[in-house]
Image (cartoon, rainbow, N blue to C red; front, side, top):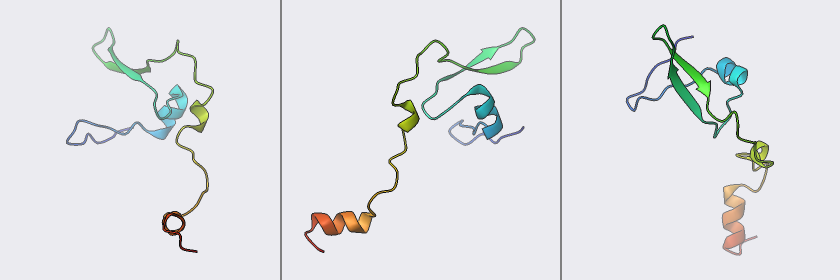
Length: 77
């Protein structure tokens, strides 16, 4: 699986790799050099207990549209 490096040195980890390693938004990863000189990506938060709120992070759910919120704050109906 190849990926492209951006000008900032960032790469997108393929979804299949994220799923296999359990990498979710906010996960920490580590790059380690193997004995043969290759670089290995590993999750760095194995020992940390997941927050009971972690599964809700980034999921506000369906709510009011921006226009509806602005109309409400302006007193429009």
